[in-house]
Amino acid sequence: MLQMPERVRPATPNDEDAIIHLCRELHAENAAFSWNEDKVRTGIQEAIRPHPNIPRIIGVIGPPKAPLEGAIYLQATQEWFTNDWALMEIFNFVPKPHRASTNACDLIAYAKGCANAMRMKLIIGILSTHRTEAKVRLYSRHLGAPKGAFFMHDGTDGGVQQGSTH
Image (cartoon, rainbow, N blue to C red; front, side, top):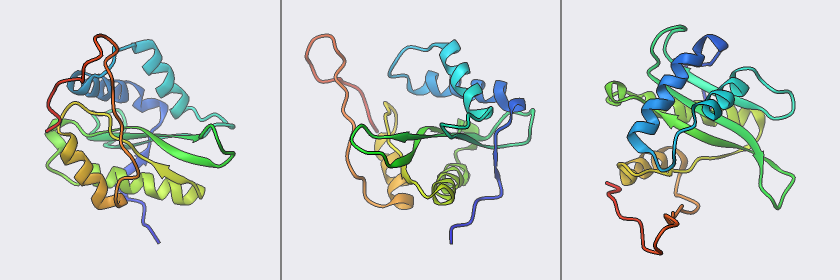
């Protein structure tokens, strides 16, 4: 039986500003799209004030009302072809000062524990412009071989997007 990491706790409304701060850091480091603060804040608020019909979960590392050492945002969803529910990762982020830690691994373990508790498959993907291969290796160690891949066309000239994924 998978143990939930004690270092990861469910986020509360008191964590809202700290989570938004992490989201800004995530976007600044790895933006593939533009930033919409209102949309981000609404999503975070929906996750920390649970909705009875669509489970959303944010797990965080760090004490309440303090800078966070990491967060993972999960949302229950259904694929277009099934009535089965799955728990999908929206983001998993650990700020640079805390990357030489077990935080990323603890957040993945928390996600697995949530999926097990809810009896749902867990879907985690990597849409990244920074250190993609390292992230794939990390997730593979915890979740097994990838079940697919993401590709992105930039929508401008028909060319392949350039940029490092290392």
